[in-house]
Structures are given as C-alpha cells and as structure tokens.
Length: 257
Image (cartoon, rainbow, N blue to C red; front, side):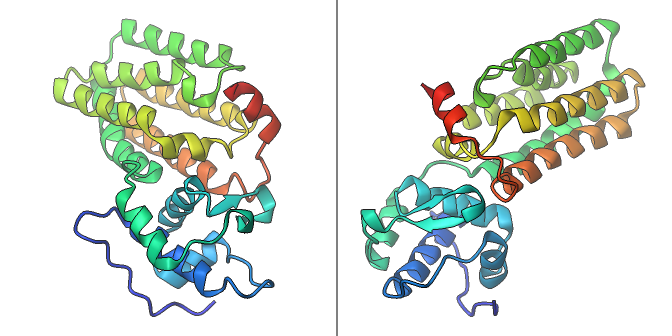
C-alpha cells in the first residue's frame, strides 16, 4: 500500500490515537460505497499513515468502542455496517469529545521507562525478605489461573513490591499511578478481550522469574533488562494476539459475567 500523503498532526488537546482514529474513520467513509473494499491490516495502516502499530491498535480500539469497527481474530478489522457508518465529520466530532485516557501502549511505554529503572535500583537494594516477598507474588500469579487477566493481584503486587524496594517514594507513587490509570482505562478492558489468558500466563510468569533471578544476583543491569524484556513481551503479545488467532470469545464472556 503506498504511503499516504495525509499528514498526522494531533490537535492541541488530542492524543495521537484520537487523531489517527478520526483519519481511519475518514478512510472508511471514503470507501463506504465499495462493497468489496476491506480495511487494510494494522501493519499496512501503520505504513500508510506513518505511525507505529501500537498507535494504530489504539485508534482501532477507539473506533471499536464507538461501534464503527470490530476486530475478529484472523478476519482482521471488520466494518460494522449494521450500525451504519458515520460521516467523517460526525465521527471526527464524536472522537474529539471522547477521551478514554492514555492509550494502553502509551502506558506500557511509560511503565517500561520507569519500572525498568526501578528494577535495576531494587536489585542493588534488595534484602532476603524482599526476595521472599517476590517469590510469594509469583506463587500467587501461578495460582490465579482462573482469574481474568485484568483482575490478577499477584502481578500488580510483584511490580509494586519492586517499586517499594527502591526506597524512593516518588518512584512508588509514579508506578502506582500508572497501574491506577490502567485499572480505570476502558481501552485496556477492550484490548484484553482479544487475549486468551492460557496462552500468555506461562510467558509472563517466566518473565517474572527472570526478573527475580536478576535481583537475587544484585545485578542492576540484568534486572533492568529483564523488566524491559517483560514489558516488551506484553506489548508484542497485545499487538499479535489477533493475528495468532488467540481470541477466545466464549471464555472471555464467561469470565466477564
């Protein structure tokens, strides 16, 4: 797909994903009369619009939340024609008024910057008691096999424990604020509808074991890298879940209820 000449410029009070969502709505409107047209893949859209895939995913989530499109596993992005396609102007106004908060990948980037450094600092200051507490957090994660991903307590407890291990109250408040934003985010909830927990839990538990191993060694660089690798794995899994066909709608619906 040729790269678009449409420049992406966020408005003064707009997040980038909102600007991209309005652009995608315009593209959909332009092709509304063509029954054979399909929404390009996220990779193609990222290339055409000159933004990253995480921004495209956040924009698609915004459109999905407004009932304009739906992400259907390997089928990709599907236009919900039964709900009617809004005009580009109407959609632009709707999305301008909607702010679902920071996008999930924006939050993950912030977490990577802050929590990786926190893990490195924690490795230098860890005590045997801290190690035991982190072990308990991982054990709790391993027991939460039937818990909805967004409601797991062991994972959050692990990351907050590392923040407290730094002995820096500013770092603790920053990490806690990021997790609170995640908990309040409707975009996070929508994004996790496409994740099959059984496919990601072993990977993420393994990541936490690696972080703990680096902390046991009191190796700042290794702890930093282990945390950064874990958060990159989270980003990659959230991006690739639909392409791998891991959506498990029935299971998600049962757990949400």
